[in-house]
Length: 284
Image (cartoon, rainbow, N blue to C red; front, side, top):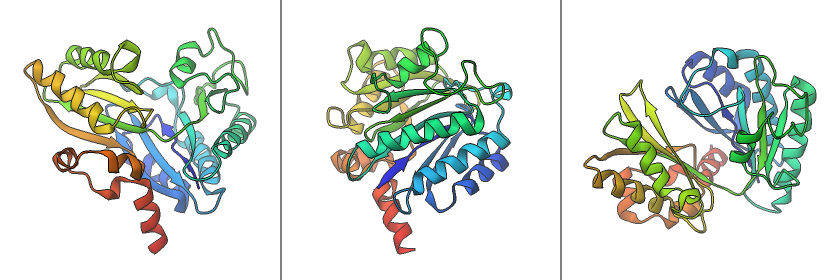
């Protein structure tokens, strides 16, 4: 089973988001939108081996019809309307995700004229998504498509990766300085938890701030460990985490590793897992 988790630089216009979701058809397992990030995450899987890939192509066409990066503003980093398209092998050979990513990258470059930057297992050099963001069009040319960004669609990063979990910890204060400091302390690149990426963001629309995290190595870092590390540091600064927000879905194995008291506190159930959504759809 192949999963695809496209990130789209649109999180505010419900009519546009509904049109994008409709384009995904029965492969859509989840849609998560954030107006301050001005970003949405679509979780796609099945039916059949090509379901996620077909849905990703349909979503890309819908993004081209409905989205324009020139009118976009949001706190989350981005370089494309269809910003990131990762493929994940939920079962079977991990190379199937790399093959699907390669095929999608060639297709979107030819079909929509969008420059493509490959990352992780889809990239022969194994470069990461943060590296692609940092070097795109400066130290690195696109792997497919034109040399310059598309006028309205920008560029797209297409990758193949293991499962990850995206999660946001909301602070009870509109203090991006605190959020950024905590993000630096917990993320791997600055000496924090292994396999953890983090950003501190302001959320002006909500009057809050946020530590936004990707747990990219679930064998080395539990989702609860990442969130608890944030909570401890925020409370040490005299503030609190108001709630923990899961972005999209998570693997059942990652959910099972979370401590029961943490799951109860954040209010999750097994419905937040990819496997539970797939099972519900099969029953339906």
